[in-house]
Amino acid sequence: MRIAFNTSLRNAQTDLAGLAEQLAARQREVTSGKRVHTASQDPAAAQAAVGEHAEIGALDHYVKTANAVTSRLTIVDTVVADLVDRVTQASALLTSAQGSVLSTMQREALAGELRGIRDAIYTGMTTQFRGTYLFAGTDSTTPPYARNPDGSITAYQGNADAASVDVDRQTAIQTTFNGDDVLRGGAARDVFATLEDMIAAVTANDSAAMAAGSAELTAAFDRVIRMQSRVGTDLAQLDQKRLTLETAMRAAQSRLSMQEDANMVESISGMTAAETAYRAALGATSTIGRMSLLDYLR
Image (cartoon, rainbow, N blue to C red; front, top):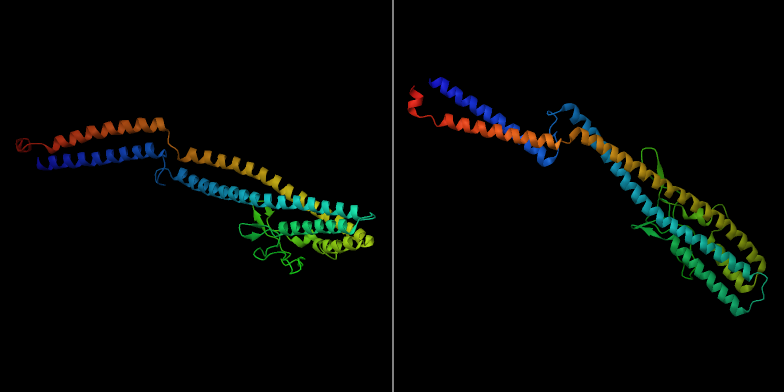
């Protein structure tokens, strides 16, 4: 009888341990909302979940990148829009100065306005985003332009390279720009040099020089408009990419939920049943453990 008693107790304890494990598993489902916690529970679902987690991680990275690039290009777009206004204003001032009978004081006032335009363009072209210059090419820690002691502006100091960032698996968006492409392009001199000459021409009432400067500003205006169009196109593309990425993210999260998430009604019902079975087994085991010596000797 000793062997039968010990065997019954061990069997009861084994059953109790199994029921306790089942109850714990159901409790994990209810508290976490997940039905798969280890690969052994459902190898196929676990493998699919790994793939979906990787996809969600990649999509989340692209969304954050697209948001950062949008912030950067929004600043670029603002600078370029202001540049359009400044070049337009400078052209208008030159037109008013050509062929007009202006006093020396009036010409000095016009020259002062041109200096203000020059300084505003300089401020825009040396704009930084998070500590890096937007218009210095990939040499983003070097100011693209600097101010000389006499107030004039140096030649371009950045490089001609451009950096781009992937915003999805097929699309890269340019994030750094060559200021010299905008302000000089293929011309002999840049907008800053043109404005310096125009300041002198207005002061001296040099109509021929002013006419040449007006032509250069017209060419600069065309370059700036082209850049503004390109940046605007990229911003619109980023908006569309974000929508596409967010849709793909929701789809991946839905697929992941199908693989991992527990059916809460079933889980709660299963937990209740497992708890009932565990308590019953616990009671039966405790009864076996309380057998008296007389019961043992029978």
